[in-house]
Amino acid sequence: MTGSRWISTDLLDSEEMARAYVARWADGVGMERLEVFAALLLEENQRQNLISKPSERQLWSRHFADSAQLLEHVPRETLTKPVEEPWLDLGTGAGFPGLVIAALHPNLPVVLVESRARRVEFLQNCAQAMGLTKCRVLGERLEVIKPFPARVISARAFAPLDKLLSLSAPFSTKATRYVLPKGRSAAHELTQQKPSIRKMFHVEHSLTDRDAGIIVSQ
Image (cartoon, rainbow, N blue to C red; front, side, top):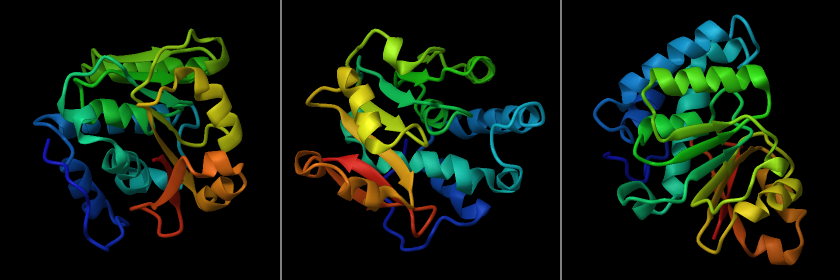
């Protein structure tokens, strides 16, 4: 894994740039895993609406790089040292960001939470096809899952921030890092929280959308 903090001011708005960026985070065969994922995703998108049709032509910039950029905000030891606590991805949907993270770091335990049965089956098939033995898919609502400590909690389009924090609280410890891509509502959502919550988080700029943000815990 050669990933390091992105210092370019250029937006990752082309497929070529996005692919090169994702490759910086991949191990020797990480890009091959993502190619397998991409093929399965495009095929399954013909049967169920996983991603928008226009974004099929921007798979690497809109989805893969958008997911991989969360690694910028995770403590390096989480990625380089053996850990027991998993990366917990809430409402994984089509696999973003959780399945991308698992593909890039196959030795990192990753738990994907998705309650929709057809998407659960798709995620399980993808994880198996990519050989991700440390990636688990929980096909239940978060509210009924027995809590466990998570090293990282991520979510894209899962729930408003206040509800997300409430639902994920049983899985959070003092060491848990939240990385929550919130699109263009990031700053506004954070300002709507009570002061004690606002002090715990800040907003980072997205590398794939100049107007979007990522809510990150301190």
